[in-house]
Length: 141
Image (tube, rainbow, N blue to C red):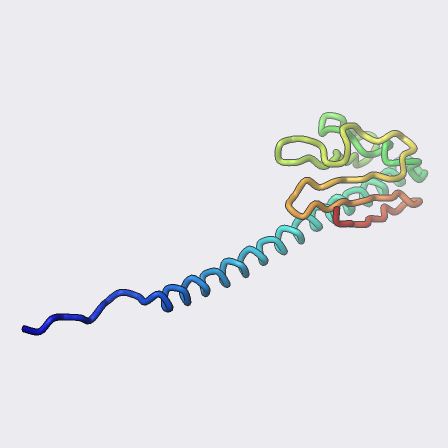
């Protein structure tokens, strides 16, 4: 009588090798996700900067003077937007509806607006009104 001693299962070395390959792929995927999320947060800050610059230009065209501060064209909520002043930009909000750039609109002479991101990468954008241009700086928290 002949016994069948041939195993059809994976050995411990083969299983270790497969687990190592899966771990490498998972590490690469997580790294790519974090990098993608970081660039998307910066894109949001850059788009807000473009909105602020457009609002500054439209304020100048509508009023014939440079704004004294962000409070002249940045609104706390969408309901505060007044089209008669030209473009008014509402503050940025999280998905939960909480403002990222403070809780109220800045005063009429405030020339620096800081937006703290509550995202994965914890970035902070600082917008500075310099004449008719809004300058932006993005920092890691």
